[in-house]
Amino acid sequence: MSVRGVAFVVSGILLALLEGVLYRFWAPFSSFPIFGRPLASLLHGATPNLVLPLVLYLGIVETSMARGAFLSFGLGWVLDILGGGPAFLFRFAMVAVWGLARSLSTRVSAFSLVSRVMLAFLGSLLESSIVLMLLAIFGPDSQRPVDLGDQVIPHALSTALFSPLIFSLAHRMQLETRSSAEAGASGAGG
Image (cartoon, rainbow, N blue to C red; front, side, top):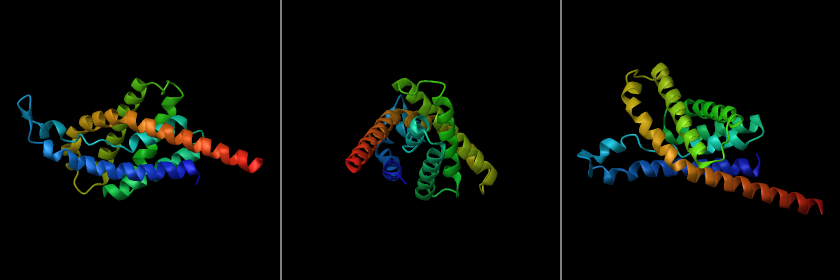
């Protein structure tokens, strides 16, 4: 695996752990009222998927389909392990989201802030749809995905909100690993 691949997987692990911390971060604010409703009702399901923008970035910039799919599968595996859900749930969803980003990146410019936020929103909707469908089909309780359906939009909005930061991190990793690889190649050649 390349240095860039290792950097993406390690970043994915750290972002998945941070996602777990963000989930617990909302709890102290849940009792505050906003517009006459407790904030808990508005924050229900608003934990972002911080790994998803990494997968989307891979779909946009990774030239090798095999490497992009493999890294997306690995990042999904991280979510499966740390999330505690059924096996292969996020592995499948992340590769599907990577495929969406790969197909859309050839048709639209994914380098503006607005297009990245929209791509993260659409990717999160796709990921949530896949996860809920798989839970409905293979899960022990077929009613559970119906109960989780009201969390799809807040989850997608929060993922889209955090996506510019993750895209920036991914772009920086891309540039750093490229420049270090070029420096290593020129040092070995000279």
